[in-house]
Image (spheres, rainbow, N blue to C red):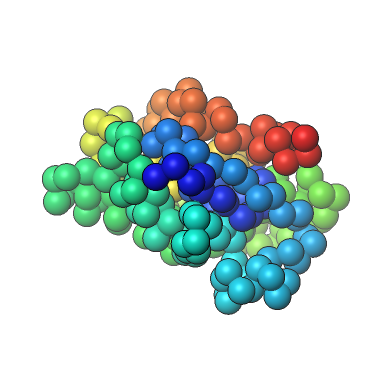
Length: 219
């Protein structure tokens, strides 16, 4: 399909990064319709017409509008050529799905909102971190790391030998975590560090960094 994927969202958001990573891995054309942090652009009537829950990201593909990140990622993977990001083996696919759900339900509130948002995002915008929230988030973050270490085991990627949607869903969250003192402690000696190193060299990751997206949005 020749129409580009238009991704509505805030540069730097791990959730906005997910469909961008998928597009990059698939070689799918895309555009980031950048929204400003803190401007409540996702609560305007125009945006709520795309997503009544006022969350990001939302995509447009021609006349097709879609929200919810897992649905978006699976759609892009299915409609564009390029390497499949979904394993064909049922057990590998189940592991991929498991990781995606761990990220949405447990990594996001602890690693991303609790630690990453307070340690990385808030200071960038001159906001004061909520130290109590950070401390409260560490136990669940530790559980998330242990669970994902168990799933990764000796494999290079969560679902096996090839990158899948699971890796693209998890990476942005852990990139933030690694920038924090809590992350340095939680990830010390973790096999997830090797996974992060493998992911960090991929063109899809290099092309979707916060700084690069912000520069493109400002151009």
